[in-house]
Length: 536
Ligand code: C2O
Ligand code: CU
Image: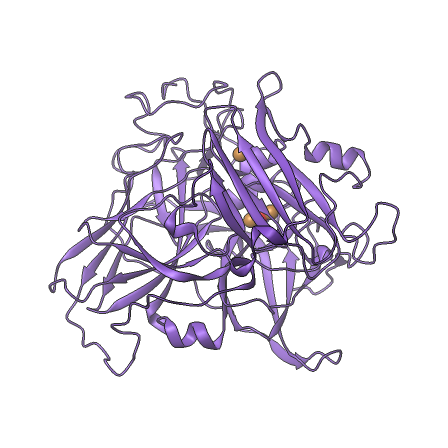
């Protein structure tokens, strides 16, 4: 697809509706740029300093009378704002508290959270006029269904919803993002995404903390001439921007000491997958996956990282010299579209700032970390194997799971399910992507799973930890082992290439209940959003 034919949707209503080709544009010479910025406005790698999102402080704390556990109360407000992403132009965004990425929530296992999400967005998205009704999903949390960001459980502008998060799971990198039905891609792309860190004593002991525990929210974007975000999802196959952002800044540079750092890398791109690697050829040490610490650290030269996956990575800067620049690069993967600078992510400049060697994590590269329930499951425990095929209908340009879509769930009055496991049961789910031309990061809510195999072979070394998203590459079949606990109720599963999810590769499963059972945690009826009469 040539850039002249590419029709870019512009935030701000200046654009025309895209009528892109029904196929994925190839990484040909035509794909030189996605943005319409003039050369002088176009950001370039390594021009701006690295920043991190602020931490969100609870506005109050309390005790849950039901179990005596501490509770942190937070508030975030979804609103339209502008961001400084480009050198001279400002970019309209939608953000939690008006920033992208939104504020990071950080707490300890065993401290519950109540997060009031206030929807103060305009009634309609400036891009295409879709209603800005939102649903907030804490990705990585085994939340009750009514607090899980069920796509159709929407909060309209002017309303708020209190989300209750149990935080009983082991330490991990979670993230919260919009999940509003059929518009998740545009809403998350516009900025409604943020990290959420849960700590526990083992993780605190083993891995760097504080300023050496660094959130990297990586995404890609394309820009219109006036600096607003462009949106072209190539007839729902995906959006591939030509600008790589880390924590909302293009290809930033971070100053680092000569010590070990921990990076919580979230690929927050709505479609692009990454293959991170270091310019030095030195290894990345994978110490955590979506569901927390990996049992055994894995040193890799590079690894495949799809949207919504989280990898916790140690980088050892001890041996580099002061002033040395190390680049974190992206080798890319099949079925992505690459541009001149999408092979770079960010850079690290090594400083001679004194290292605190009383911090035992300064030089520690653990080899054995910690097991988890998901990783100790065995295939012999499985009571059932279910099979799912993820594919595209080339006539409708719609994506499905076993021919099912969220439209079918809506049409059934939210009853239709693709699986009905019992509470605490262990199952194997096999996911096949054989239609060709696409990869699908499949996310299953509620559970942490273990990847048993990919195409009959072992999972990649770096994904031998608890996962909630699995990269199902073109021509791949994965087998996943998981236990459905602790909650009963309905949960979604979907592709995390968000244009696929919205069109309409999302289904649901029901844990521990029959269709006719009363469900006290029905996300369409329990814990409704409330009118927000607070006037600030
Ligand atoms: Cu990160 Cu159902 O989503
Ligand atoms: Cu997909």
